[in-house]
Image (cartoon, rainbow, N blue to C red; front, side, top):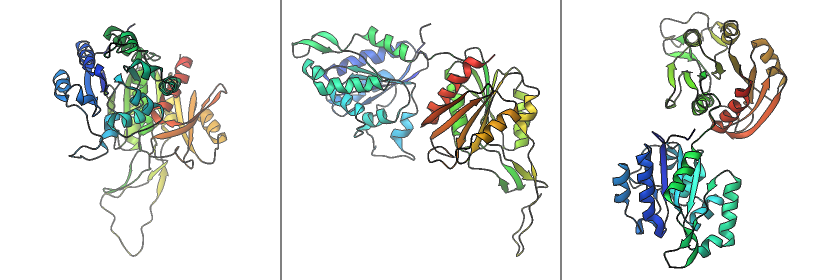
Length: 399
C-alpha cells in the first residue's frame, strides 16, 4: 500500500542551485497530497528564489538562520529537527552533499542534517562535472551507506546548455521516493499498545515527595515508535517535562497508586504492555497531612514497599509484557531473575552507571532478554532508535 502524505510534516531544504525554482513545483505537489510543508533555504538559494515565494506556497515562514536575530528560549535548530516526518533536500548541491557526508554543520540546513533522526532524501542538481567529481561521488556513497536516500540526477541539457547528468529529477519521480521514504513497516498494525513512562511521586507531606531521576524519554520514544509501526497507543505517564506524543492517547498519573488504577482501567483489550515507568520502590507509610516543619531533631520517615504492579497485573493480562530493569555494573543475572519473577515475555536492561545509558539523556545502551532464552544487545544509540529496535524484535513474537 502506498504511503499517504496527508498530514505528514515535511521539510524541503533548498540549496543554491539554478534548479531552486523547481523546488517550488515540488512544494506544490507535496501540498496537493496533503503534506504540511516547511521550507528551509541556504543563503545562496535565496539568490535564485526569494523566501517570500516559498512562504506563500507553504503558509509557513521560511527557515533561514541557524541563529536568528530574535532568539527564543531553547536551541532553535535542535527544536526544529524534531518537528518533521521527513526531510527532502531539493536541490541538493555538491556542497551540501559533502557537508552531510562529513558532519559539517556551519549553516541551518547542514546542522539539521547532523541532528535529525527522520528519513532524509537528497535530490541532486548540479553541473555534470560536479556530479562526476570523485569527492561528490564519495559523499554520495557515504550517505547511501548510512541509509540516506540519494537520487541520481537526470541526464539531459543543463542550464549551461551542456549535456550530461545533473538535471533536477522529474517531480513524479521525487514524489514516488518521498512516499516510499515514509512507508514505514506496519509491524503493529491492528494492535493496541499500552506504554508506561516517567517516574512516580510518593508524597511525604503536601509539598515533599519521594521520586527518582527518570525523564520519561525512553517510554515516550517507545510510544512514538509503536505509533509509527501502526499501533493504537495509550501512554500512561508520570510527571515529566516532555511534550505529549502526537497520535497517542495520554493518561497522566503521579503516584504508584494512580498508575495501578490507570493500568486497571486501560489494560483491557491491549495486546502489548511496555512497562517503562520508573515506579518508586518505597512510599511513606503515613504521609503527613501538613508540611513537616524543620526542627533541631530530624523527623523519622517510615517507609513501606510499593506493591509490585507488574507482578499483580500479569495474573490478569494475557497479552505480551515487556518489563524494564535498571541495573549497575553490567549485571544481567538480576534481570534474568526479575524476568522469571514478573512472568514477562521480555525484559529490557540498561545500566545507570554507564555514561550515555542512564537517566535523563537522549541515548541508551540496552540488552533485551526473552523468556525463551534469547539475549540481544542493542549498542548505544538514540532512545528513538533503541525504541524501534526493541519493537522490531518483540513484534514477531507476539500472539
